[in-house]
Amino acid sequence: MGNLRAEDFLPTLRDRGTGTAEFRTVSDEIARLLCAETLERLGQGNADRIMLVPVLRAGLALLPAFASAMPAAPVAFVGIARDEETALPDLYYTRFPAVMPPRALIIDPMLATAGTACMVADMLMREGLPADAIHFVGVLASREGLVRLAGVIPCTNISVVAVDPELDTRKFIVPGIGDYGDRYFGT
Ligand code: PRP
Image (cartoon, helix red, strand yellow):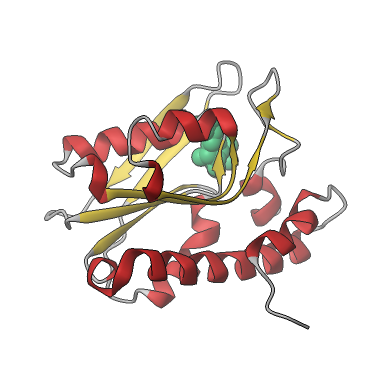
């Protein structure tokens, strides 16, 4: 079998019949591949000085692969949940280091409207990071979300496995994966 790429695992995540155990195993594999690709893209100099910023909750699914590959990287936490009615991001928790590193990597598997990722990028910029020092890594984006985030940070700093064409009326990615956090954590 040749080398599998992250996109080869996406059909399993998209399949509604995939249960928690398989979803988690496949997501962990994707996280390792995404992390290897991110390290290559960042270059060793930048990777050594980057802060990981997983977005609670689903970002925690990807964190172990990144934290293990970058054992010295500080980890900041941002808790944001989308309002189910409005789909707008609601910030409920933040924990940044006292001294901000020069670069940050926002980690969140899903980029739908990009309201969440843009809120995190804004917070990082208010902490003093320039837009081009902020990176995003995820699994699935909507075209709309990708365009919106690329209006805030450079598009070359955004890395996702796949881009789906649209959002539905509830602002879920279509065809999408469903609620990544619920599926990964079995809730
Ligand atoms: C999901 C996802 C992103 C956000 C994406 O989180 O993990 O954080 O929605 O949507 P957006 O691009 O339209 O802002 P959710 O709000 O479902 O919270 P959860 O991870 O705690 O389930």
